[in-house]
Image (tube, rainbow, N blue to C red):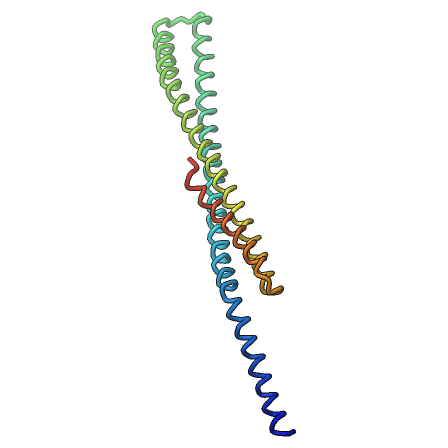
Length: 186
């Protein structure tokens, strides 16, 4: 091999290396964007899972509260039946019957208040469930949009076309906006 040919090959190799370096430098913002979006996907996934868990826990609490309401309601109905029975049955000891009837009436008054409180608590917990589900749905949408943005951005690395990167950024911004709307939900 002649010295000129060796020098030409060396220059050609350096030129290819410069082009590769330029390509790598041109794709660095894409890779950085993908890294940031991947972190955002992870964050929204965790937030979504926690919000779904919150909804399930609140649903369990609401179910327990409705069970307590139902138990109080059954107790109140049974007391009302016993009280009604005392009014129609002939009882030898009228004073004892009146005492029992008074006791039943007092219980009924207390249980009426308890029933209202139990119902209010159960309805409040159901509202919390609905709110948590709405937040979880936003986080799920956010996660999906961010994942789409990540995948579309990665196509840029394969095609070397920045158009896909821009589309990926649009989806990623939509995902971040969806996650941010959780702050505006009641």
